[in-house]
Length: 202
Ligand code: ATP
Image 1 (tube, rainbow, N blue to C red):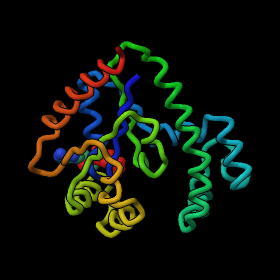
Image 2 (image 1 turned 180 degrees about the horizontal axis):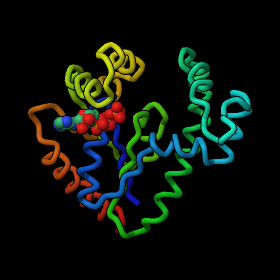
Image 3 (image 1 turned 90 degrees about the horizontal axis):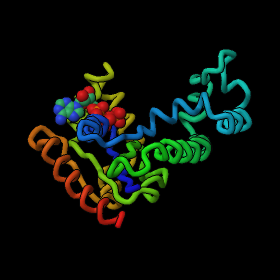
């Protein structure tokens, strides 16, 4: 199966772009949503988190103790790296399982991940897309969507790899500002992927 990774900074509009691909019939795996689910479902991952961050990482009802985990990883890159080293392989496994259901009945699949490049996940994709938008537009979008301040969005942005760094690893770009049509850009890429995917199945 031909695999397309898609990523972009906070508020770039990667999820919005994925919804357009979904309208075209392309299945999308949302890695970040999946990560949250498997952290309370995948027994191997749960065990790994408990042994690394303590049994108190989970509440009695089985839910993740977000406060506890956040207090450990929020200000420590080393601890965050430990958490990612547990979660990312589990998400890769979940993606493989998810993808099996499609066999040959879809031309390609899309994997949306905020950390597509940072996690190394892009290496498991045949190609990838970076969604970009100017910083001020991204900040305004997230302020409205999440009801947060510009400073809070900027703090989250500062923790992410810059678009310049991501661009070095990107194969395709979608500009999601206020002047370019994302529908036209998605249609153009969809056409390309259909051709490449068809040729790669021969
Ligand atoms: P995050 O990494 O924070 O999850 P994201 O990259 O997935 O963000 P979206 O959630 O798709 O971004 O978009 C952020 C907000 O901006 C959403 O409320 C979305 O509806 C809006 N948005 C995205 N693209 C556009 C656009 N072209 N025109 C208008 N609104 C947009």
